[in-house]
Image (cartoon, rainbow, N blue to C red; front, side):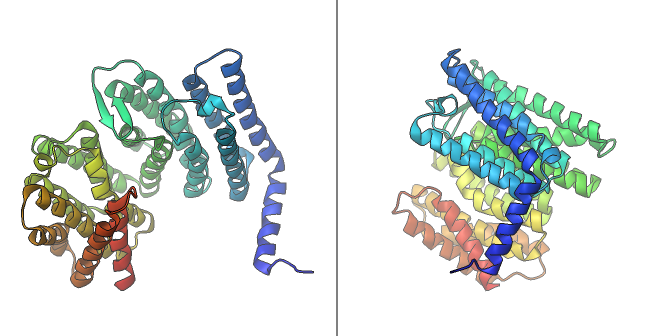
Length: 431
């Protein structure tokens, strides 16, 4: 008779022990979540409420239940099992055509599936800390719902994102609700003390509002809690030193957008994205990490990328910078200095792709343009870094460009992102 390997046996015993220890809290959470789904289904079928309202009811009700998790559960694995179970319930409801109180919307969105992932991800990042866990979840559940409902009213200032439109009239209630939520939680917890108690809510609200404004197909359920956690974690853990970094980053981001708005032909969504990227690069890495990203962006603006491509919209900004942003975030969480060369390579690959496309549109020689795209982010780094593996960075950037060229023949989404990450991963392996 076969037996399980020792590692699997130990895991199974640990899982069983955690579930047993959390049995009462787990049953309470599971029962309340099921009750939220049942009430939403009843409201849709019996009261004939529109799906958008029942969906938001689940959004808020589920969030209210989740806020009690730090006091009901002691083990991460228990919450993971619950999140996996409700993810499976959502998938089953979609496949079977049931659970129309959540899935019965006309627009394409994956927000419902992201919800349990956001919960377990925020719990893991926060390590169960009530302030760092509850604040992002409350913003996602309450502020996002307020923005969605208010945003349905016709607004005078609407702008396009990848899957539809947003309005500044919808962003204002989100900002106000997020600000009040963070201020209330921090005041109740007695952290971090004046003046940070007033500044931190403002920074969190700005970061979350900007993230929500450029989200698409339900990704705000991931972006909002992550943005809230990132600002809260660093400002509460590192104190005023990191608080000033976020303030400086937002000022620099706003200045960068203001100075390049006309020349770059930025759309509203693209401007918000540039603001967010600049803020992250400065807040997490200072000048060393901000300089290469800003140099690449300014180079594209000066060379007339917006004019050649019609305008710099979200579809251009996000693919060009996303690979570098992922490496910046990895550095922010790990403080691993060895990520700097992969960061330059990912930006170099993105620069080579962007300037190669610009050269094609302008009928310029492509090889000099590609070389310039690789050099743009590297030049500022030479001013602050003692030594850089320039050969490895250049070779990896070209490899990323090659990956993009091969993927360009396919219908794969995110080709520039894959190419940038490939360049970064190659540099990490070589250096």
